[in-house]
Image (cartoon, rainbow, N blue to C red; front, top):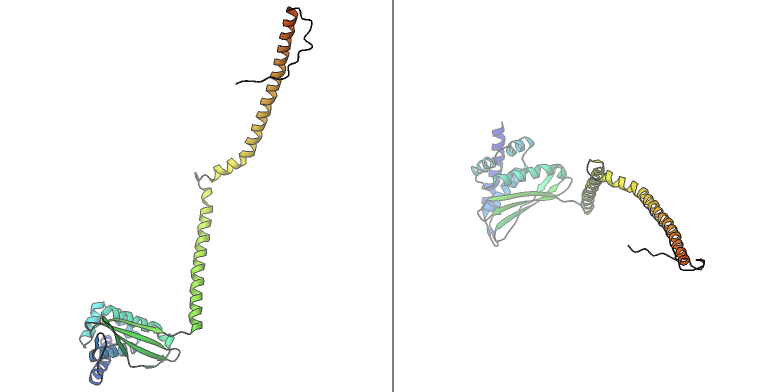
Length: 258
């Protein structure tokens, strides 16, 4: 059954290839666009657009070399991975297009390296286009399909993508901030030590002020004692030398030299 499906697809594209070769002339630009180039583009596009779900699953499950060999026997030169990517892209957009009303004839353009066939797709829900790229060796190397969206739809998608990106970024930043805030509870992180230092700072300051006051008070008491000793010594000296009194003697200040 699966072999019959693959053969049906191949025969459909082979028929398109044969008709194209018989009825089309080449155009020339940088690379010459041959009848075979046009026929290959038509045939591959016809095969992809008519592939059903079962056939698509079977083809996508094949190896790239197997796909290339499968189409080679029907006259197509195509990269297996390019065909699978093109088929997968088409299948993912079928619901966007809705029922296909028509696929235009290819618009062929070329440059010095490759030839591009552009197909305009008319769908029941929306239109689009498919591009088939052929290299300078006549081998299909890329098949891409895109849908046409309105400006409002494009802006809506862009806005949604922006919101998702920004939202993801903010969520990650919030999560990182939360994780960092937990570091202070880890042993040896320094958070507890800093908190204890903050708590003990006012107490240490008060103790320091009390110690300074005690030192000043002790110095004042020492000064009073020293003044009394000096006064007594001066009085004794006066008495020993015939002086009468030390009432006129007053110690104004004492300077300490350390």
